[in-house]
Structures are given as structure tokens and as C-alpha cells.
Amino acid sequence: MTKLQVEIVDYLNEEQKDEVATLYYQAFPLKLQSLWMFAGSESEAVTVLRRSLRYENGLYAVMGGKVLGFIGLEKGDGFFASLHYKTLKSSFGVIGGMWRYTAYGIYRLFHGNIPKDAVHIDPVVVSSNARGLGIGTRLFEAAFIWARQANRSKMVLEVVDTNPQAKKLYERLGFEVFKEEHTGLFTEKSGFKKVIHMEKSLNSLNHSK
View 1 (cartoon, helix red, strand yellow):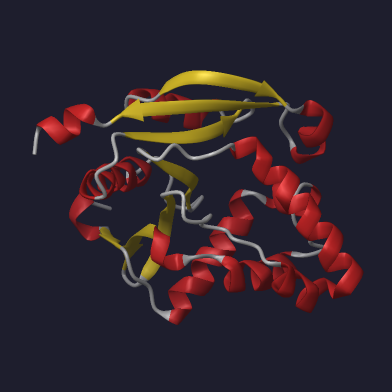
View 2 (cartoon, rainbow, N blue to C red):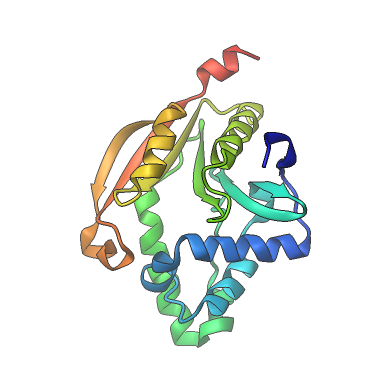
């Protein structure tokens, strides 16, 4: 696979939207099962995600019509994965929807508020069949351009302690740690005990316009 074969786009057809919802689940099954959706199966979680993702707030790596990865971009006007009670209710019933919506709200507290001058990245996903091919880097490169055009001066994201490979990628791209949160009481069943907050200044990008 060469760099030219993968296209970074900001639009999807309906089939590709299904692929993104599936990739999202496959990247974070424990989070979706035991932290903020408590889905009983992949199909159940993908159904909810398909109705909840704000696809217009993402960039997507596509080759041959297939989505190989994507990055969610949040400017403070809502989350990329924005779960609503109505959506959860339709899948889990009144009571099931209500307590899941509450759990989702608690989970979102770990992300904190997005500074007005920042773009928040959540999530970054690359298909297991396409890792190690530079797709994550290309998505970030496109995201830096997107953020610059949105007149933002920095980019922020979170990475968990059990994903050191992702942390190394972010550091290589210029992100630095500015805060760490120990969350094991709430997140141990989801496979991590600490959330690491990182940020990257985009001033150098702005100066190079």
C-alpha cells in the first residue's frame, strides 16, 4: 500500500458510515461494554453508534471505497460520539436507556471542557488490518490543516495508560503530557487505570501558512 492509494476525506456514503461504526466498536469494545454503553453484543453497540456518530465532524482514510481509519474532531459544539437518551431508549428501553445515559455522562467527565482555542481529538481509530502503514499520521496531518483553517491554536486529546504505542505516536507528532488522572476506580474493568491528557501547540503551523 502506498501513500497515494489512501485518500483522506471528510464525507462518507451510507455503507462507509456503517464501516466507521463497526471500526469504532472494534477499537474500544471494553469501553462500550463496561463503561459507557454496556452493550451486550457488537451488533447492538454498532446499531447505537451508527445513529449517534456525528460523521460531519470527522476525517476518514479511505482506499478502494473502504474506510481504513478515522479521526473525530471536536470544537466545543458537541462530541463526535454524541449519545442521546432517545437513541439509548430505543435500543435498551426506558430504564436501560436512562442509566446508560447517566453512565455516558460520567464517562464524558474524564474529557473535561474543550478550551475555546482548541480542537479536541476523540477518537483516533485505524483498522487492525491497516496498522503500521502510516494512516494514523496521515489522519493527524489532515487534522492539523483542518484545525488551522478553524483558527484554533492547539489540539488536545487523551490516551490511556495501557496504550503506550498510541502515546508514542502522539509524542512523535509533537503532543506533550499536561495532566494525568488516575481513574481505576471507574475504569479498571474497561482495561485501563489512568487517563493521560496531551496537547500540541499549532502556532508553528499557523506561522507557516
